[in-house]
Structure formats: C-alpha cells, structure tokens
Length: 438
Ligand code: FRU
Image 1: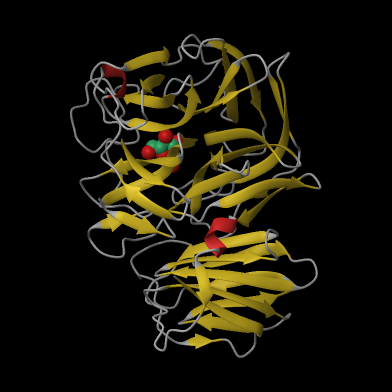
Image 2: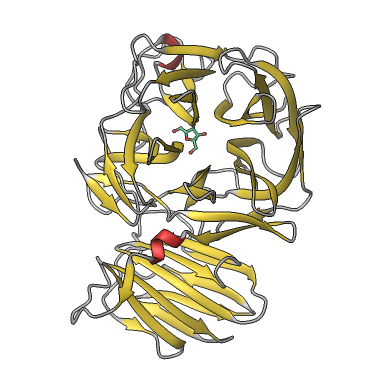
C-alpha cells in the first residue's frame, strides 16, 4: 500500500476535495475526489485512505467509481456517517446525457448536465458495491425554485436531535448561492425541508458544511464568483450560523471570513475526531504538478472552534507530536518536512529559499513569485487581515507545501511554492526554533 504522511498527497493522478471524512470503527477514513489516469481533473472517482492519527495515511483501493446512469460522468463530492455499525455515504452523481467522452467538460452546450444525490451503504467501510448498492435519494432537481438541475451538489449529512439532515449547495434563479436542507427519519427517504441564500457571497456554494463545535455553530462553503469569476479561485468562506430543527431554517451570520488567505485551499470538509474535536481538511489546489505523476494534496488537520462570533482554525495536536527539535546536520529544506516557530516584528521579513514572508501594515504577507512557473497564471501574493498584537508564526514545510499559522488560530496562509532553494534567511525573525518531522 502507498503511504503518505503529514499531508495526504495523491498516490497517482489527480485529487481534489476531501470526501466522506469519518472516524469509523477505530480508524479515520478519508475519501477524496480522484482521477487516477492523469494529473488533471477528469471523470471523478472516490479514492480512499486510512489513518489512526490523522498524520500518517495508507491509500486503499478506489472506493467509488461511475457505475450507474446517474453517476456515469462522475462521482462528485459527498460525506459519510455511521449508523448501526454501517457506513452510509452520500454523494452527487453527474450525468451528461449523450456525452461519451472520458474527461467530462464542465458544461456542454446542447445537453443539460444533471446532478442527482445518491447513497451507498458499506458494511465495513472497506467494500462498496458499486454495481448494485447505489440508490438515488434526490433526483436531479426540476424546479428552479428549489434549485438548479446542473449545479446542485456535495451533500453533507448530520444527525440532529430527532432526525437526519442533509445540506447541499446550489444556485437561485437570480444566480445567488443557496443551501438546500433535506430531512430524513430513516437515512433513505429524504424530503425537501428548507433553503437559505444571501446576495453577497457568490453564485454557487460548493461543498457546504454545517456543524456544531466548541463555541457555537458554523457554516463553511466554497463560493463561485465572489471576488473573481474565473477558476482558479480557491476561496472558502466560514461564518457562524444557527440551524433551527423545528423549522429547518439555517441562518447565516452577516459577517464572513476566509478560512485561509493563501488562495490554494478549497472545498473543505469536517468531522469529529476520536477526542471530540471538530477537525477540518481541505484540498490544496496546486497551481502546477511537481512532477508528471501526481497533483493535489490535503491540508494539515485543523481543529475548528467558534470564538467571539468568528470561526477559528488551529493545527491539530497530533501534528505537533510528530515534530522534534532539529538535529539533522544537513537538513533538506527543499524536500523535507519541518516546523519553524518564530516571531515577526512590523517591517521584518524572512525568506524560505526565495519564498518571502513579511509583516507590513500589521498584515502578514507572502510572495512566492520567485521560482514560480512562468506559464501558470495564478496569484503569487497573499495577505491576511490585520494582525492584532504580536505576530507569532508556526510555519510547516512539506516539500513544496507551506502552511503558516498566525498566533495559533488567528489566520493561516497555505501555499504551494516552486523552485525554492535550501537557503533560509531568518535574521530578522525573533525566537526562532526549528523542528524536524520524526
Ligand atoms: C469542488 C468541486 C465540487 C464537486 C467536485 C468535483 O472542488 O467542484 O463541487 O463535487 O469538486 O470534482
């Protein structure tokens, strides 16, 4: 079996969103959007990996693949829950009538893409009866007042007090993002129960997640067309929320934040870990492959809390357990795994082999333009909102992937870097400590 650690990386080919993340019968199961045949997006399968600590992963066989009419052009994103010892998976099936090709185009002019919501139940979380075990629970939508036939996807299921609930993202007839809520008593029969929309957060809300965590309730989704309407736009929003089970109404706060400021993080999904923490993973959308065999990774596990009406993300404690003070005589800061702890003063700047991190106007800013592939049009600068008080950084390096956490959970910047050299320039930083992955 292929293993991967610190960051869950694609075993081969392409991966995008985390799917079906669950702690199930003593193990963490992570599924992910997967196109095994090339380093680009294609007809979606669900890859599968297992972990006991959220840090070391073992890739498994492909779990879901297109096998019925409703998902013949892709098994899109979805979620998992446990009930009576079984694993229930909910996902979006994509069907483009008349289309025979391998690599699904996002839109085809002469037929309408159909998005249905499907389920499949596994006895053990390891075997999935793709041929006979799939069931359509919510057919492609035909009433635009409920949602859009093509853009309706990524069901996330949770247990309420008296029933099961499912949320997916769609778009209104006026082209605003919308979340639809469905309700079920038995996990198989689902009825439309409510919807919510706002006019200020883009037009299609992908991969919605609703949950309760320490400090409150939250909603997260990845909108299309918030600041810019072109891909790549790896923006994901978080906001506090309230779900009223009596009326099935989901109320979203007027304020929202980005879950990360690096512009490479998208389509997150959360679940509860074995200690009761709400933990989130997201897709690190790599601007270009590092080599020609794989592309795509998931970010570090992040513990999600609500503090003062804001959703916060901190590195999961299991990650720290894997770092020890640096003893290597010739550390490999280009390919290896390290954690740096340091403090930056206003106006100071450091460089990790050409990747610049600096504090300017009390905002943490990064510049990855040095060494960045010239033919890739992607944002190379990033900046956080204003940092209040001191600026303590934890910087995780895993080969090309860099994740920076400011003051534990004040803000994060996750970015893929290219062409970094070995040279660390840290003279302007204070209290520097370097750790290696054990
Ligand atoms: C988000 C997304 C989801 C969809 C999946 C397809 O990255 O577009 O909305 O289900 O990826 O791979």
